[in-house]
Structures are given as structure tokens and as C-alpha cells.
Amino acid sequence: MKRTQIMAIAGAVAAIGIIALYATTTRVDTAKDNVAKASPAMPGEALVRVTVPNLTEDERIGEAAFNARCAQCHGPNAAGRNGVAPPLVHKIYEPGHHADMAFFMAAQNGVRAHHWPFGDMPPVPGITRAEIASIVAYVRALQRANGIE
Image 1 (cartoon, rainbow, N blue to C red):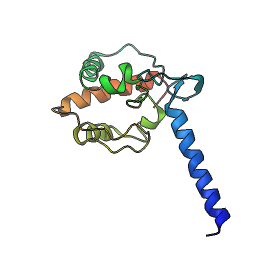
Image 2 (cartoon, rainbow, N blue to C red; image 1 turned 45 degrees about the horizontal axis):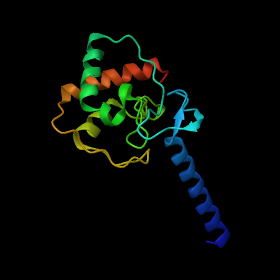
Image 3 (cartoon, rainbow, N blue to C red; image 1 turned 90 degrees about the vertical axis):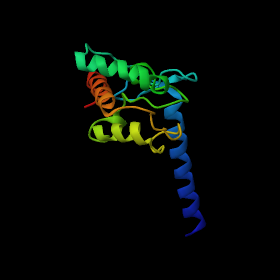
Image 4 (tube, helix red, strand yellow; image 1 turned 180 degrees about the vertical axis):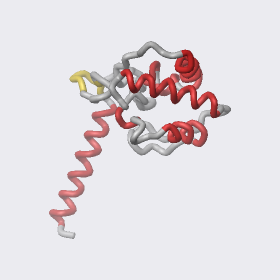
């Protein structure tokens, strides 16, 4: 390759990295559109605003399981936590991109970082498939209420 081609590729990779870093260190207006605000999010602060719908009984069970098993990292209402873990109420996690089975696999086996620079997610010790199913129902309800389908 010519030096100019290598420099162009390196510049493009650097630009993508800067965009990815900026996207995870700024507060966003909505979960669906991921529109960045001017002010950066503080460490641990929610990364997206989440509208919480009226939940069914099953979804409330999922909310309780989420709060016990996931909220410490993924934040209340799956809004993410700056510098800790991504929001699950985000278009990246829509069912067409991350099917329900992806949540089962991540919770049971952990997952390598691939969309966000938060690092790898460890498996959730002792979590049951029933808990994961209820958590998925809760997260999907949050996603639908925020225009992610």
C-alpha cells in the first residue's frame, strides 16, 4: 500500500474511535435516537433517559430481578452508567440486532466487549434462566416504551 492510503485508513480508524468514545461519554437525549447533548455525562451517571411504561405483573417481576442482578452495572431502568456499562434501552439492543438469546448468553457466559468501550461483561453468578427470561421481558418493555422495536 502507498503511504497516503495507509495514512487515510489510519485517519478513518482514529475518527471512528473518537466518535465511539464521544458516544459513550456524553449524556443522550433519547434512547432511540442517541442524540448527544453538549454536556458530558459524569462518571456513573445514566447514559440515556428512559421512559418507564406501566408494567405487567411479569414485567414487574423482571424489573425486580433486573434491579437485583443487573442495575448495579447497567443502571436503573437499564439506562446504562457512564464508565461502567452500556444502556440496554438503546437501538443497539433492539430485538433485530440482539435477539433474546443474546441476553441469555451474556448473563450466563459473559460477553466480550464489541459495541462499547466498557470492557468485557462477566457472567452473572447463580442467575437462572427464569430470572433472565423475566429480565428480558422487562428490558423489552422498556425498549418498546422508548421506540425501540
